[in-house]
Length: 167
Image (cartoon, rainbow, N blue to C red; front, side, top):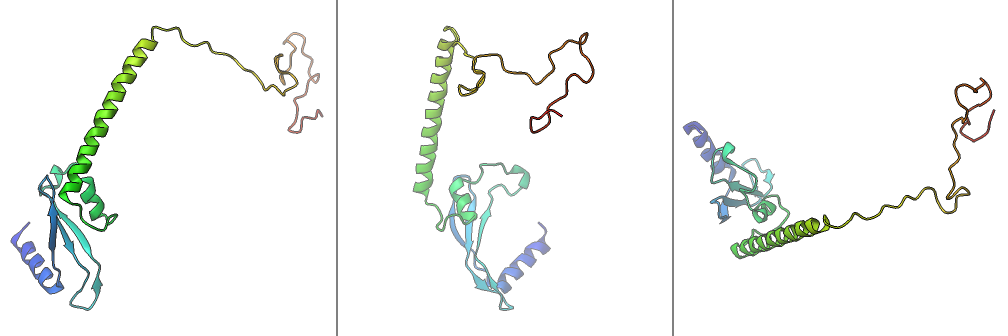
């Protein structure tokens, strides 16, 4: 950022009555600011803002997860108050517990699958039709012609229309 841009930023903040209040930092070094609602020099009401100043100034250094979920929820205004350090640590511990439990479950499931490979596969039953159908357990009626190519006479068979009537 050039010196002219910094100067312009300082002048803009001075004229706009924008007051940045730091509300916290996270373990990555990101700083979070709150700017309350205010009126600018033209009398317009400017809504409140929530801003994060990233520890890594370069955009290419940013990765998903560099902002904790609690702070991201505050920035996006899905929560009203900024998170406390105790809350963040409690949630981090909970996430680690869930991750350990899922790893244990995955390992147990893998062992169970390996032990089931030794057993014979279950017998598959074939069910055709429905018990209330008049042809249950019998060969289903076919709508295709049953004659062979040698005995077929043109005009001896007509396909059924949508209503099931022959024409």
